[in-house]
Image (cartoon, rainbow, N blue to C red; front, side, top):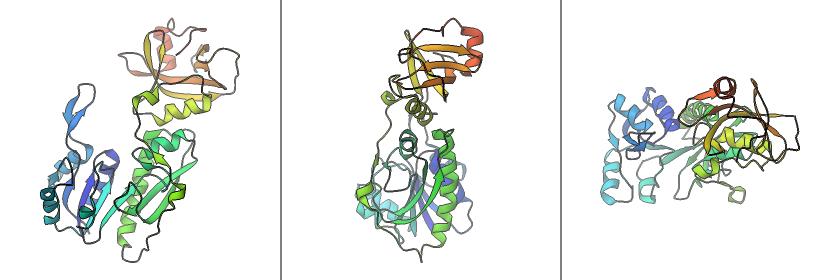
Length: 310
C-alpha cells in the first residue's frame, strides 16, 4: 500500500517509524510543518518527523498551507492509496481529503469526542480524567469531527505526567493503527456524538503559573500536565522556580496559601487553598533539574519555613 504520512511532533515520529519498518507499506512522501526556532537558543530546527524522514531518505514536503492548487497537485502526484495524519498541525481542505484512494486517517490521542483539538493529553490530566485513549477516524473538514473507525482505552494513573502518558499512547496508537489499516475494508465507521464534545485548547505558558489558592489536587495535576512542557512555575521573592514533580500529603495547615510550612529531605511542604502539596523536584533560575534534597543541601537558606511562593 502506498502511503503519504503527515505529522510533526515526537508522537507522530513514533508512528512513522513503525510504518517505515512495515513490509506492506511504502511511504511515498512525508509532510511536516516548516522548520521553526526551538530550544533556548531559538535555532531553526527540523521537526522530529522530518529528522526521521531524513534518516531514511524519504521525500519531504513542508508547505505553509495545503490550500494552494499547486501544493495539492504535488500531493496528488504521489498517487497514494492512503494518507495517515498524526498531529500534523495544518488544516486539510476537502480537496486534499479526497485525493488518496482510501481517504485520510487520523490518529487522535483521546477518546473522541472528548478532547478534540491541540492538547488532548494535557487537558485529560488537568481535568482529572481516569482514562483516555486513542481514536482512529476518517478525516473530514471539521476539527477532529470525522467518523470513527475504532477506539482503544488507556488508564491515567496519579503518577502519570504528559510525557509518560504520551509515550504510552504513542505505542498504543501505533499498534492500533496497523491493526486498523489491515481491517480497513471491513470496518464500519461510527459517527461522533457532538453533544458530548469537549475542546482541548492549545496550552499557553501563562497556564503553567501555579495559583496556590487552588486545591492541592489541582496543583498536582497542573504540575503533571505541564511536565515536560511548558513546566509549572512559581515565584519565591523575585526568583522564578520551576516545579517538575510534587505529591499530595495528608498534613493540613492554617497557613496562607503558598506558605512553606516544612522543609526536609523528602521535599518542601506548601499550603494550598485546600490541602498540602509536597514539592519533590524543581529547578532554580539557570540551574539543573534537581531533587529538593539536593537543592536544600546547597541552598537551604532560600527555602525557609514561613516564606511564601506567589
